[in-house]
Length: 246
Image (cartoon, rainbow, N blue to C red; front, top):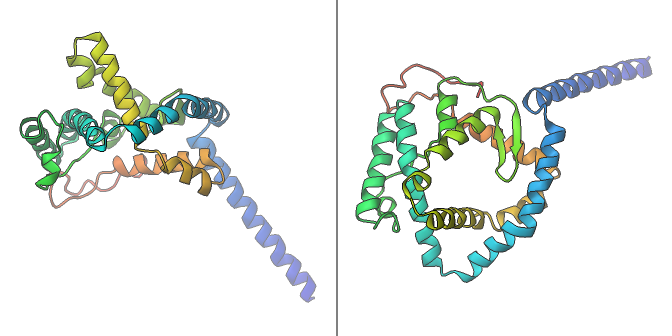
């Protein structure tokens, strides 16, 4: 009798585990229906990174004086703040728009075109925003997860947002000299990659499946970035509530 009850419990547990597995599989299928292709693109990106990007970034990090690295990072961060100011405005966030715009003004004037981050020194916060975030903020669903060649994690919505970000990138639109424009773009890419040196090694050590870890982390981060949250600083957000579908 006890054995029968035991078997019954075992079957119940197995049924619950099967349902959980099916639910997890369905959730994965809905967010990552292109997983097979995404994994192939991800492997391609990792090979390119291992052969080209990471060695260049490590050389840059180890051989370029830290003060110059900081200046490069500050300069391109200031250009990004210009676009962030516009996107914060498109998201109807007056405080973030004003604060990020003030950062641009302070760093451009007193920080010598952004080479020095004076705004952070005096306590002016950065509120990064992009067009994919703006779309999500106004209710555009993220769509399936995709891994873009060379660019990495994205979604259908964020890919469309990236196209707009890239089209109106200040460095791309305002610098006429072709050599300077492309040279600066490469420098910005190397500087960005250098910021992840060390973190990539740790990720490889802790993640059983790096692809899944990066995908889930990316989707959670973007979901948080596109939620409408009531704020004491922005009266316009009011009682709109949370967006849980981005």
